View 1: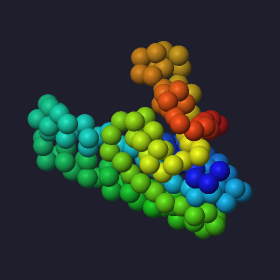
View 2 (view 1 turned 180 degrees about the vertical axis):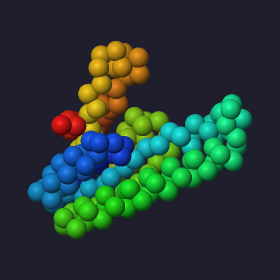
View 3 (view 1 turned 180 degrees about the horizontal axis):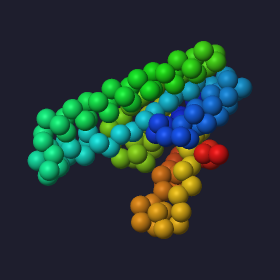
Length: 150
């Protein structure tokens, strides 16, 4: 196992996902790539800012910019922590639907393992919105390790 892709969403499970992925990478001498996919900007670009009725275009752009800056800072901090632990790491923040971007990045990075977190939503939530981990597991070209939030 040479390459591990860890998908993070900056939620309360992110720390555990990065901890598990970094530990595996360190033990195996593998490269670690941290990734985050954000739908917000892709959504507005696809639909146009006019689609967001009730929002002023400038306010929407500022929200997107602020979210991107926040994600970038959070990712830089995660990478710093992993590197301090002695693990070779890189990161990428992508725009698009989470499952598609995880699968695409896993292919491009030639990942041997994908590490993702579980939010343990209830059955109703899963039925209505689906689950990222189930979609990734069923379509990934490599093994997927799901880290529980607790």
